[in-house]
Length: 162
Length: 294
Image (cartoon, rainbow over all chains, first blue to last red; front, side):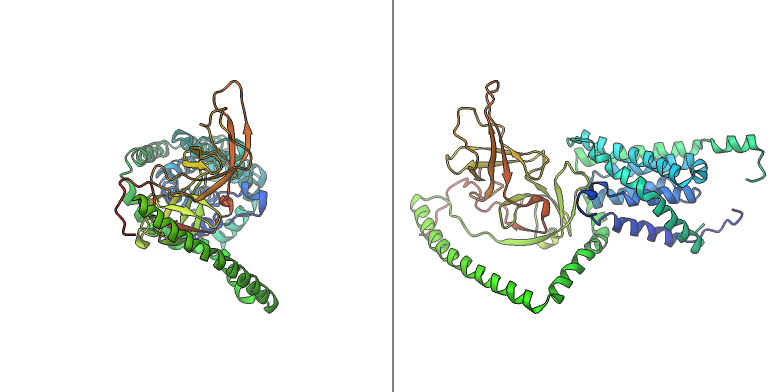
C-alpha cells in the first residue's frame, strides 16, 4: 500500500476485454437466460481491489462501450455501471473481508441494481419488461462470482497489478 | 491501517466518500443527458458510428468460436457425410430449378399482363447477404446487429428476409454494421394480407419470437386457423407478396369488436444466422404507374 507506482493497467484492460468477449458467448439452452454480465462483474472486482484506480469514470466509459455493443441508448449502461462502481467504492472495505458467499450476495445486489436501472430506462423508451426473467443474469452472476473472484485475484497477484 | 484502534477501524469501514458522490452525480447527469439527446434528437449517431467502428474487431472476434466450429464441420467432415450432403443438395437444386422455370414463365406472363394494365412492374430485387453479429441485450426488444453497414451499401428501411419469409427491416445503418428490427418486436407493425380472403391488416409484434398479433380484424370477418399471411406492400417499405406467417389462433370475443388473432412467423427469428437484405423501395406500392415497354 505504500508503493505509489501503478502498474498492470494493461492487465485490467485485458480482463475487461476478455469479459466483454465472454459475455457474447451463449450458454446452452435455458441456462442462457442466466448468462452473467461478465463485464459488470469484472468492473466490480477491480473497483473493489483497486479503488484508488478504477472507479466511477471507468465504469462510465466501459458502460458507454457496452451501450454501443449491445445496441442500448447511449448512456444506458454508462449510467448503470457508474452507479455500480459508485456503490462498490463506498462499500469495498466491507466487501473485501466478506466470505466468498456473502461477497456473492453483495454482488447479486449490485447486479440487480444494474439490471433494474437498465431495464427501467428501456421501459421509459417503450420496451417494458414483460416478466421477471430480465433479473436472471444477476442470479447467474452471483453463482459465477466466486469463480471469477478467484481467477481475477490470482491474475492480480501474479502480475502484481496495483 | 492495521494500527487503527477497533472503534476507528469500525468507523473507517463505513465512511462515505463525498467526492465520489459528487463524481457520480456528474457522470450520471452526463449519461442522462446523452440518453435524452440520443432518444429524442438522434444527434449522437456520429458518436455511435465512431464507437461501433472502434469495437467492430471485438465483435468479429466474438463470433470466432462459431466461425471455428463452422470451419471444423466444413473441413473435417468425413467423406460419406459430404457425399450424402452433396447428393441431397443436388436433388434440391434440381427441384428448385424446376420451380424456377415455372417462376420465369410466370414472371414473364405477369410482366406482360401488368404492362397491359400499365401498372408498375415487379423488377427482380438486388439482394445482399448479411450475417448476425449480436442480438439485443434486452429479451423483450427484438433488434439484431448485422455485419454489413453503409460501407456495403446498406440503408435504413431495407427489408430483411430469410429463406422462409420476412424477418424485419433495417432500422439504422452504421459504417460497418447495421441494426435491424424484427417483425416480432413489440414496436413493429407489418402491413399484411391474408391470402385466402384478401383482408388487409397489420401484424404487430408481441415480443415473442413465435407470435404476431392481428389486432384490427372485426369479429365478423372470415379468418381461420391455418390461413397464410403475406406482405401487402402497403406502406411502401416491404415488397408485396412475401410470406410472413400462418394464423395459429382465432378467438372471437363477444365483448369486443375485434377478434383476438395470433399468427406464427414463418421466418425462424430465434435462430437467425444469415439474412438477405432486399433493395429499398423497389416493388413497394406504385406511387404513380410508370410507363413500361411491353
